[in-house]
Image (cartoon, rainbow, N blue to C red; front, side, top):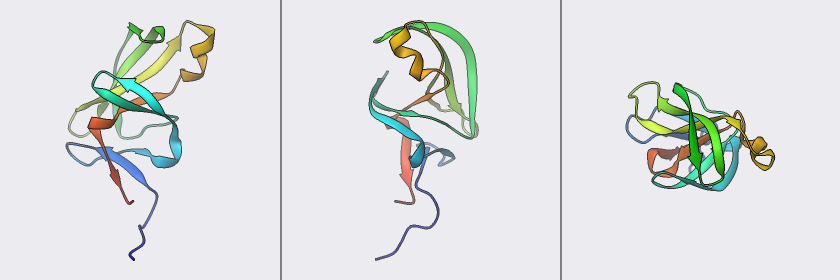
Length: 106
C-alpha cells in the first residue's frame, strides 16, 4: 500500500489550489449555501470579500466570503463577528463548503 506524502489537505475543487489542512477541521456538522460544509480553524491561499452582515441559520453574523486565490471560486465564508454569545466560538473561523473542496494526500 502506498503511503500519502505530506499532510492531508483540502484543495479548491476547480483548480486544486491547497486551501486547508485536515488537522484544522473543527466540525463537519455545518451547512453551507449548497449543502454540507466544514468549519476550519485556518484557511490558506484564499482571498476575502467585503465584510457584511448576514442572517444565517444560527442568527446574525458579520461574515466575509472566501474565494480561492488562484481561480476565485467561491469556497465559503469567514466568520468575522458573532452577535450571540453561544456563537462566539465561530469568530475568526472559516466555513468551506464540501462541494467546493476536494481531498488531497489521503
